[in-house]
Length: 482
Image 1: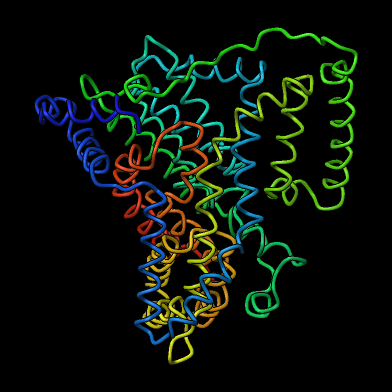
Image 2: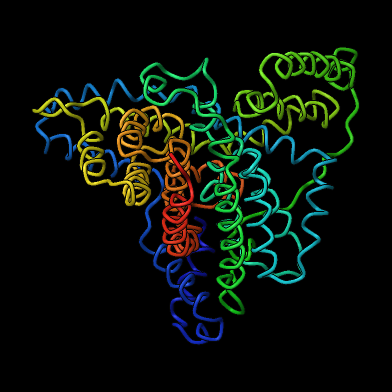
């Protein structure tokens, strides 16, 4: 964080709470949480190191040897490398596409809709959560770039922190209820479903998970709640901190027109090469749609990144402009590249390191919650468990593979609806994302912020979302037959 930002924070604190009450209680709450987070919330990298040490201590407590723990740490460290690259490409390709001339104009039009600062923050939350139904990565990129566009409006004076948190709502609240739900897609695809899970539940079609009317109502309820909360929680008056106050440059410098200066550079400026490559990619997607279907194709993060990469190449029209945008986008992925390997190690230490009784930490937790579940309490018990474990293992698809055997077996044993068990996992698993820096990193890279800048607003949203999620999971479970 720049010195200017620190000075602004100190100035605000020195002024005390005068005038906060005039914003309303919700805005007061968000302001207080944010003030505390700015002062006490560590950098995301410190957070992941501390989590590593806490899990190490827990492994020691269950009787694992130091050598076992060290082995688990090292063995798991690089297990998320494919996913790390995918997430880095989410930030890079999204930035490349959004800084192309056509997308810059589109996002500028979206940014023209709000007429008030609070309305702008609520608008960002709506766009982010609507996009998350199609793809969680799209919600991050689109939301982040929309915030930057709104911040360029000198007439708006929008709080950059609140808008940044609003851009995170798609991933922090509703993504797992949409088409990119890893667990729902896994359960619906017999070719990808592990035998350990299929033997318990069999294939569960999307009509019994994300397309249940109960699931759609839950999604719409959370979207409405987030928009309302962010509208009233957005700082007003002297408590607003714009992008300029935060020391963030959101301007877009147009590229000066360039022309080839020597014959060899002609290939860098011609649109012919990008068009030919894009045509080849169109053929690939046609084959994927024909063989796997649209839903399976669009749910693949590799396909999403591939499509955005090709789209960026096409929209920039030539290789020189495309490579310039890539060079500028790479710094947005720095946090992802250095921190995701640690999360791979944490996941391995939770699931692969066994205590003196031959059981891992994750199974100790699961046995505790599953043992106390009944047909009536199942949504609440499993929801709480998934949320807690989701904070330590922030990977929707990977964590489902770990949880599914005992969660689905428990649902089967107590005669709960199998598809709703998946949705209980999906809705609850997203809750810890609101305060977990793991998923914030690509967005923070785009916004040039740190986790402490937005987590106060995210925590405010969590306070309202968590009880609503748990209540609706329980209520809707009563409407579903096994």
